[in-house]
Amino acid sequence: MSKAKHYWCVKVPEEISSNGEIYLHADTAEIINGDLIFKKGDMIIFSVGRINWTVFFAASVIDGHAVYVEHWKGEEHAGDY
Image: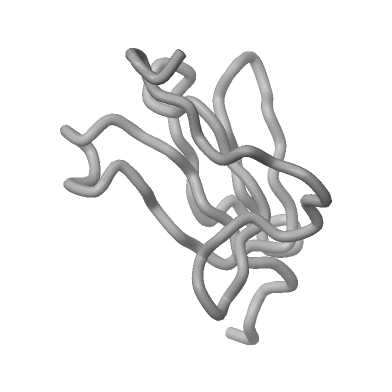
């Protein structure tokens, strides 16, 4: 299987991933009825149910940070306000 076009990060609860993040390669990302679905071509390669993700973004293969973002203060967590 050839490599997918994009690298993604999905923020999930720590019960799913100990660091709260899942990284994957996929051609496309779609939200269908709140579920997050990643595809390579026509094949679904990964999905996350609507209650198990908070945000996703195209990630850098170098450091995992968001790409194509011009300005961003970074993540804000409860208590940071």
